[in-house]
Every structure is written in C-alpha cells, then in structure tokens.
Image: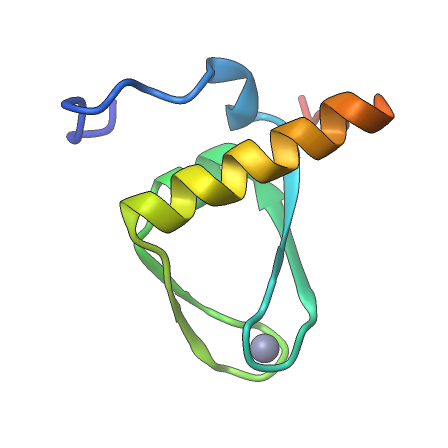
Length: 80
Ligand SMILES: [Zn+2]
C-alpha cells in the first residue's frame, strides 16, 4: 500500500486504466497504468530522457482531466 494516505485516494479504478502522459519536453506520450503514476514522483521520459517531476497537485489534475476525457468518450482501456 502507498504510504501517503492523508489525501483522499483517487478512485481505485484509475490503477488499471492506461493514461497517456505527454512529456513536457518532447511531447511524446508515456502510456502507463494509473498505478504506475501514483507510485512515483519523478520518472524519465523514455523518448528524450527528460526528467519529469510529478507532484501531488499535478498528479490529481492529470488524473481528473483524463478521467473526464475517458468518461466523455467512453474509451476506458484496462489492463489485467
Ligand atoms: Zn520526452
């Protein structure tokens, strides 16, 4: 279980949905399951090797934008 539990957790559903995170430097989309983004605060873009930092606010905004988008289009992708 993640250690930071002070904030209300995002819906568990997001753990297994795939989210495209656009790299701020090269614009390529890093597509990973929601859980992957929750487990780390920073990661390296596999395309341009740019270090990407994801703080809690950015993470929440990222998820809420995408969840809305996914819900609107009905394009929920899941991994098992
Ligand atoms: Zn990049």
